[in-house]
Length: 632
Image (cartoon, rainbow, N blue to C red; front, top):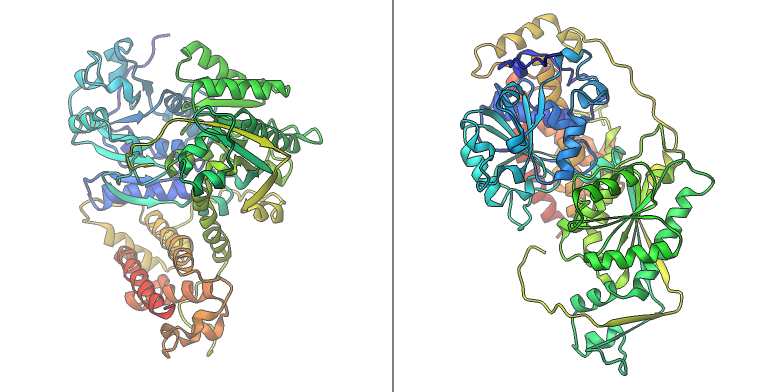
C-alpha cells in the first residue's frame, strides 16, 4: 500500500481536538495550553512563550496539544537528548495504539491524527519531510557543521511553530543558530526550571509556571521522603598517609580540607558506599514486601564510569541484578540495558549522566545517591527520576507512591533538599484552599558559579552501624487519602449560558464582544472557563501559599486578623466570618478583585477577565508590602 504523503497546511487550524472539557487531560495541561493560546493568538505576542512544568506532570502530552488552534503550518519539536527524543516519539507516534491523542481522548478518530516524523539527517527523504505536520528532531541533528543539517534542507519559514523540550539547555550555539534561522516561528519553551544550566534566566516570557508543590498536592507525582545516613564513626586520611586519621570535624577545624573534598572522599569510599547500598536495599525490600506486584526499583547516580562499576559490584555482591548506563556504552548496549529496565529484569539501575531529565520509568521508587551535588539543577533532575506517579489502577498501597531518597550525611545535600522541604507548606496550603469558598462579600451581616577547586580525594573508613534520619515530604497526604478517587464522567457540552450561569441575552452579548477582535476567539465560553480556572489557580496555588511561606505564617493561625487591611469597615467582615490566615487572604483577594472590577464574577464582561489577571499582580504587590510592615 502506498503511504498517503499529502500535506494539509491548515491541519492545526481546521481539526477540533477535545481539550478544555477533556477529563483525561490534567488541569495544568489545559491551563498551560490556554496561556499559550492567549499569548500567541489573543494577545498576538511574538516573544518566546515559556512554560514551567515539573517532571511527571505531562510535558510530552502538552506538546501534543499546543499546536491546535495556534500553529498555521508545520511544527518542529526539538529535544536535547536521544532518550528524551525517543520518549517523545513513542508518545506522539500516530502508529502507536497507545499514542497520546487517542489514549487521552484528544481525538476518537485515527484519521484526525497529525502526520508525525523523526528527522534523521540524510536518511530522511524530502517527500516524507514535506508531508509531516510535526517533525521531531534531536538537537544534535541541527549542528551547523553537518551537511544534512535541517536548516540546509528547508526554508526559514518552513515551520510556523517550534517547541523546545527541556529549554534550560538552550544556551549552546546550536540552539541559538536554529532559532535565528527559523526566526519567524512561534517558539514555545518547556522546562522544569525557569533557569538555564548556566544559572541565567531563559529568554522569553513565562506564560505559565506550575509549582512542584501543586503537583504533589494534586498527586500528579509521587511524594518524597529523604533518608540521611549518619555514621557512628568516620575517619579520613590525607595524601595517602594511613598513619594519621582525622574525623570530619578535625579536618574542618584544622582547615586541612573543605567540605567539597570531604564529600568527594566519602563518595569514593567503598565503606561509605556500602552503607548507602544496604540502606537503599532495605527501602526497596520494604516496598516489595508481601508479594507486592508493583516492580519497584532503585536508581542510583555515580561520580564516574569507574565509580558506577564499583557501585554495580556492591549491589551484585548483595544478590541484586543491575543495569548500568553511561555515555561510553554503544547504542546497542544502551538499548539492551533500557529493555532490561522496562521488562523488569533488574532491580537496580546505575547511571552516569545518562538517565537524566526526560527518562520516564514510573517504577523507579528509591533514589540512592553516591555522588555529591553542587547545585540545585542536577540534583533536581536526578530526584525527578523517582517523581513519576504509579497509576491508581496499579498502586496497591500508599507507599507505592512515596519515593525514598537515600544519601550520606557527608555529601552535604541538606541545602538542596531544603528546596523540597519548603514546598511542603505551599502544598498543604493548596490542599486547604482547594475547598475554600471564595466569597466576594459578607455571607451574613457579620553549581552555576565557576570556580577552581581541589579535585583530590583521600580515604574514608567507617566503623559501627550508623543511623538513618528520616525527613518526610507530604508523606501524610497519601496515607490519609488511601481511597481511590472516582473519575468524573465526561459531561456533554452545554449551551454557553448554562456553562457560565448567565442568561441567553448576556451570553449573546459576550459572543458579540468577541467579534471584530484582531485575533478572534471562536469559543468564548471555553476562553472564559480557562480564565476562571487561571484566576482561581493564581489565588489558591500561587499568591496565598507564597505569602504564607514568605512571611512564615501558619495557614490555620489567625494572627493576620489584626492586620490593618482587616480593620477597615469594608473588609472587616472577612475576619468575623472566618478564623484562619489562609481564608483571610484568599477571600480578601477575591473581594478586592470584585471591587476593582466593579462587579461580581457572574456579571463580568468578556474584557473584565483580562483586566482581573492584571489586577491580581497589583493586589499581590500591595499585600506583600502591608504584611511586610505588619510582621516587622
